[in-house]
Image 1 (cartoon, rainbow, N blue to C red):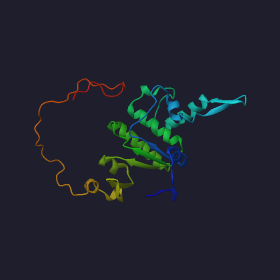
Image 2: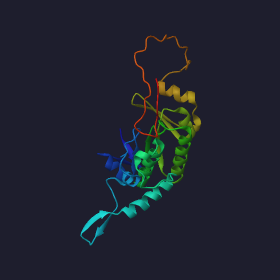
Image 3: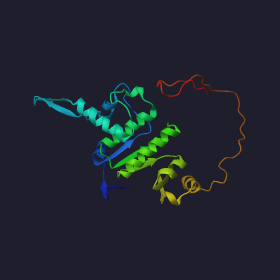
Image 4: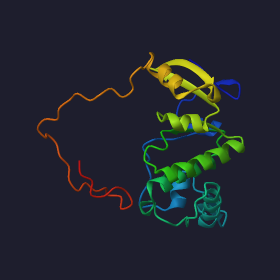
Length: 222
């Protein structure tokens, strides 16, 4: 296959090439540095610097903080850039990742299952950010299996099945049924068949499972 960007074929050898071209990605599995603050997470590997006596460079913390504050405002986060990532919720960390993507002046941002661990209120906030980015001319590639989200925020919908391209439609032309039919490759006549299985002896049980993240799940039993 071939990737066209701004109408021209492109060939990337690594993620850095894509970032330099203006393509950024937010992965489903977030990888924050928990014991570093927001500013350092945003600018890791590319800290703003300043010269000392014209001889050597040091990190320009004042500039980094100001640039971080500007980015946080763009994703509607009222947070101090000196806050450690371990003190944030999953949705806030995800917003930090979006801010980082914006910091590259990305023309295209790829979001892989961005709502997989968000509450409904947090999803609404994410959609507000996506719509604001779209209005600024940023293209969003939104990867999801949640049908209601796709129909709610998409302009176009592309469906792939088993690694193959099935088709692209305007979102307003699609229904939930048509999306599912193209995803599975056949008509589904019974989405919720009656359950006939009979539970047997318990083979695995979980009690009081708690995340190491204090703002995540607590005391889960399965």
